[in-house]
Length: 333
Image (cartoon, rainbow, N blue to C red; front, side, top):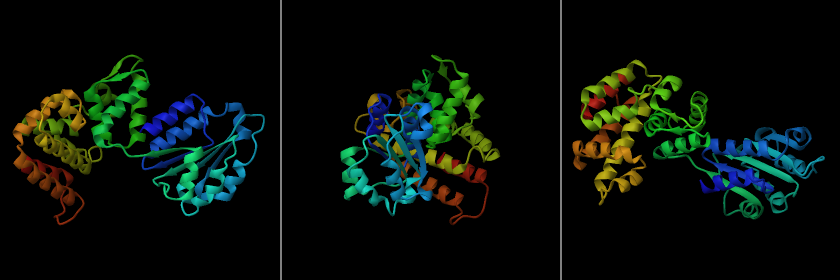
């Protein structure tokens, strides 16, 4: 996300461009940059006359262009933010004329979620000359703990690797929810202190003993009884522990083991980098790899796929999520 980081840095330094085209698959990053511009471009006392918020479903390219061509009132800039701009995808190319010659005193922010500009067309080429273009992408699961750690450090706090892993495993790649949980944790942990798994359990409601992270650890160490105990807990609390999330976690875990078995070098640093995990967890991967040799991984992945289909009601007798998980563990362990 170099483009995101660079845009954020320049905005904070008040190095603005006439247009910000924020597009792609991760709405959180788009919302963060657009909000940063709202907070940074204009002082609060200038916003009534010089800030306009438009919505794609309620506006047109012609209206956006007309507003952008106005001059600011007793200010250096006017800010025009177009939210839900993806609603204008059929007519967005009409913006090319303005993008080719933008109003210098206007800062136009286009929030184009879950869509991208066609780089072959004139609009993108005009944007490339005058605009800051940020294409956002979903974070892979293995990148989430690092992202959590970075966000916590921005709040002048630390988070231990287990707490970050549990939070990532339990919340998943919903960055908006993760951000809110981090904000909550930072309210109860003082600046300079460390967020631990106990804090996550107490203030986020994620058990430090009964979670997908601990389930994988139990399987990898051969503690089958503990794995079934965790599965039983999940079965009693399906809303807090949806089976599809657990299945995704197990699939990722055995894909990590498959990658580990295929690595020519088992150097811990190389393993941690290849698998996207904290070096502390390499020993657990090594232990799990001894329990699950290469020849067992592909059949296990097939078993997990079958469980995934069962949860979705495909080729399966209707049964509870708890029963599906218990059967899955019987077949894996």
